Image (tube, rainbow, N blue to C red; front, side, top):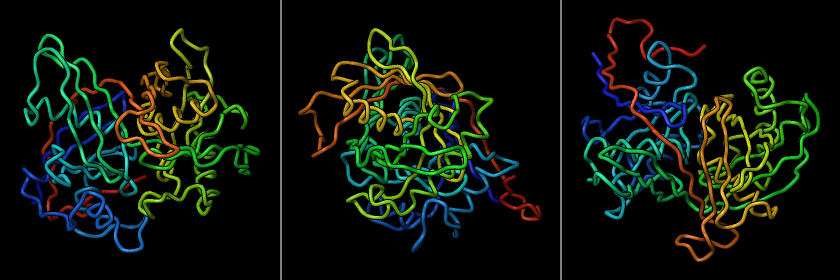
Amino acid sequence: MITVRTVDYHTAGEPFRIVDTLREGMPPVPGDTVAERCATAIGPGGSGTAPRRGALDDVRRLLVQEPRGHDGMYGGFVVPPDDDGAHFGVLFWHKDGYSTACGHGTMALGVWAVDTGRVAAPDHGDVPVRIDVPSGRVTATVHRDGGRTTGVTFRNVPARVSARKVPVATTLGLAEVDIAHAGACYASVAARDLGLDVSRGSLPDLVRAGREIRAALATHPATWHPGGPLLSGVYGVILYEELPDTPFGPHQRNVTVFADGQIDRSPCGSGTSTRLALLAEDGRLAAGEDLLNESVTGTVFTGRILPSGSPRTESGGGVTEITGTAYRTGEHTFTVDPHDALGTGFLL
């Protein structure tokens, strides 16, 4: 009988299922860094949606697939950090494999670290939780008041724009796509350019457009990252619409379609970083202004670009912060009976 224990959270509606491999006594993932462990999990010549093999991936499949999960599930394996500068590392996973960045997951992990006492926190004030992810070191600053967590702010690796107005033909029309990197590569397109709005009723068409755009950009040079193939290639497609500005800055709503047609229920943390970089390049977002970014479910992230000269900036990039909320939804002990013909499950 296989037994796996998880702690589950949601960040702005998007699930995040946490497996602490360090405390569950799971075999270590080969590699000296989190990025190397991610590459090992993906496998030689693999990509984010390549077939997976091995014991760790059996755990991913049984947690994300039915009957224990669903095709919108997301989670992470807590692993050792790159060095003692971080509290821990994480390998992010979804229904199709692994990802190099996950803002909503980083936010959930920060709250989890405080909830479990892994990182000591005051009753009042802020506590930074430093996490090594495949794209670098990120920070989730957990906000506390009256002995409880009231919010969390995710500081991402630098975001940079790599291409603007790339024409992409879809079955819904010609899209002009912007490409930017912020731990993962995202393509942004205005939903109205394809005759769509960002609503639940439009989800089938939004997913179809997202899949087509991602496939069309598979070999586009702007999707390449200097860090190598692990960080290259379109991970998600952001279909957004403009809403009336707030007194503090722009206001948008989006659906992010990632992996093979998976929908982010949140406004997408690392995707919001790329939206911030694009808005800043357009002169629509200055330091000190906020982007109010909504999801299709109505949940909200607030994002901002830090002033120039902030730590961990790079040429052509800017450091972003995204604030939201994350809440625990449950603790689970999942089992797989050796006589169960469904094994680790299935996806429909």
